[in-house]
Amino acid sequence: MARLAALLAVLAASMAAAYVARAELVAGVAMSGSFAALSPLKVPQGSVVSSDSLFVVVFNQRDEPLHVRLEYDAPPGITVAFVPNTTDLDMPPHSSRRFRVVINVSDAVTPGRYTIYVRAYVVRNETPGKVVVLEGAAEKLELIVVGDYSVLHVRVVDPGGDIARSALVRVMRPVKGREVSVADSWGGVLDAKLIPGNYTVYAYMAGELVASARVALRPYEEKNITLEAKVLYIERFSVKPLKSGDSVVGAKLHVVIKNLYHTLHGVTVILEVARDGNIFEERPLVASSTLPPGRSEYFLDYVPEKGLEPGNYTFRVKVYAFNGKLVAASKTLWMQVPGSLPLLYILVAAAAATAAALWRLLGRRG
Image (tube, rainbow, N blue to C red; front, top):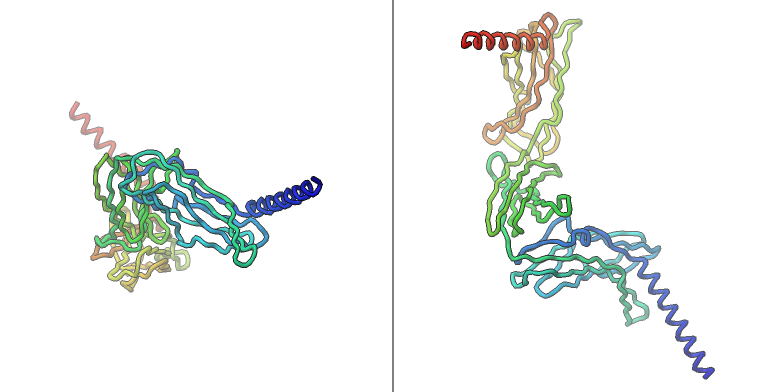
């Protein structure tokens, strides 16, 4: 009996030590992300859920490297893929890895409620030829598969009508009081099978929003929408008086044009100048007709051939491209040349004259 008690004590101690070692190892890996937070997620039969909004993050919280294996558990007809497609991870101490989760629901899946698990296992080679696998962390998603569906086709085009191949298309819908991406695609084209409802479609280029639209989808409706991308815009425009002594002889212009697209040819940048409300000159600002991607900055002096007469001047920059189409325009800036009535006075006087004319007209009718 004494020997048996001693043996049981040794066995208990060994099991306790193994449990402690396992607990320490398990405590070293963790998971977070939007996967569980989006439960329950509604999707139609025969659809693919692929979005940056659906992801998990795996953490190694220990002071030593860990080998982690990423796996999933889903009912028949539902498959899960990870992006990047690497499920065996060698994770340095205190590191993390983010994975996009792609869910594919086949047409054969019966409408209903399903559960998907994503797990991160810690794998350790205890002895040669022996592998110990421990479950470190898990995330659970409740998936509701519905029979009703809609189909959405999105095309993002540039101002010339060609597909903007560098555009990211993203479809968002309200989930738990906030907008969540339910489908996205690069290349300026998106085709998605969605549940009926209200959506907002966004298009991005170089990380900036270039177009958007709201769309309502009815059950079994197939809808096509085309978004025209704002591929360039005037990021900065300023005007200051250019003086010779005490006299204003022109204007100093600072223009920054941002091109979110590829190199554009046949571009014309025009400066529009008006005096006292009347346009009297439009001149090219830039000699080159090529606009490279990114920012193009120009510092220019505007001096008219006959000089500046006293008056209230306005300046505006317009950009033409894609066979002469107006694709961008700046705000209108004002500059006063001394010797003229203030612009505010002119505007007030014009408004007063208009009001007086209306009053006389109404008086005649009365």
